[in-house]
Image 1 (cartoon, rainbow, N blue to C red):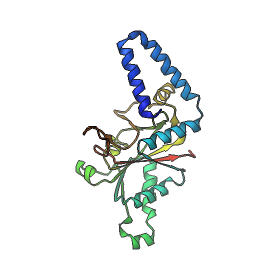
Image 2 (image 1 turned 180 degrees about the horizontal axis):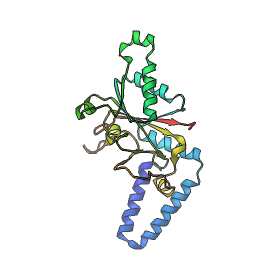
Image 3 (image 1 turned 180 degrees about the vertical axis):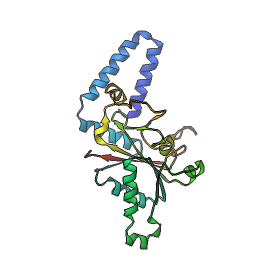
Image 4 (image 1 turned 90 degrees about the vertical axis):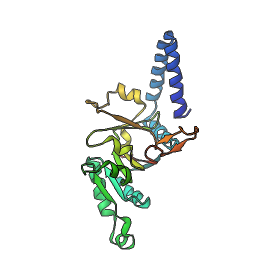
Length: 235
């Protein structure tokens, strides 16, 4: 059963409970049993499910390490022809900016003058027009991953604006593998949500997609066309 089928199954169960209140307790029991089944799985199984769900949703997953992720991402961005990147204002963003500044070697600068990437933190003043037309990629950090749906939880705020992961064509998210949990239910039960909830908490499971036009699935119509997930397996 894939993530889409699991979500539909829950929606059908919820609808049935609303129509027949006597089934509510039974549905709650099924949900509790389902959550217990996930928590009994090994963390390696969470990781495998998380990655597979992301791949099923057309995301790209790069397993890397704390020491290497910034350099590997610099190579990816250069290969994709990214010219301008906007990052959240956090430690990981500064690490990435430093890596990008040092990535273009003397050889690359001579042979590929356009290889340099204009990378900025969100503190840089940008107009809405620039954000929508001139920024090629946005870099964010997720605080949790959900194995059941392959979702990334991104806490938004002044240092991690919501638009950062919703507007640029390329969405890049960094996640520690140790932050992956079974499901949103287990995340709530473990009280791992932020103490002071932000205005928006994003759950991102892949690039933007829609089937509004003739029920034909299309990617990138209303947001990022691509999602790269950098998974730190040593953290």
